[in-house]
Length: 114
Image (cartoon, rainbow, N blue to C red; front, side, top):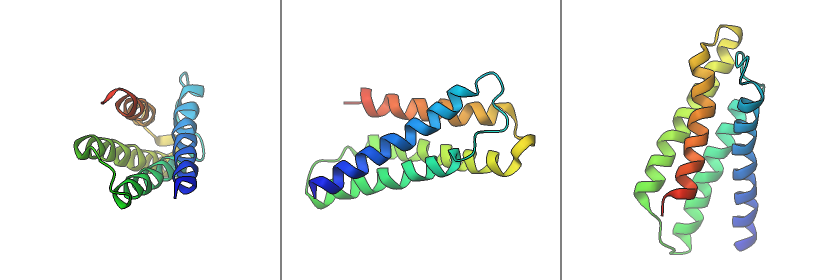
């Protein structure tokens, strides 16, 4: 079970790193968002949910408030990324920046909320 948790954790971090890295690499011209950002955001969402499920299965404590906030932000990032990907060149600049900015906020919450 520990091996599965570690694999999911690495995948989760790689997905968020891709979302943030793709956004940071296009700060000057954020539209259209980089290909794969929407799928990386969805991957981060799914792996995050699986990580919480593994903690619950092992009867380990889960901070439900923290997980709830992170889930809402991850859902927002995923939806915005898919909408921006679908609009392609007509994506509003704020939407592209919201995807990256909210991903950074999600990482800050993960690290700083104790």
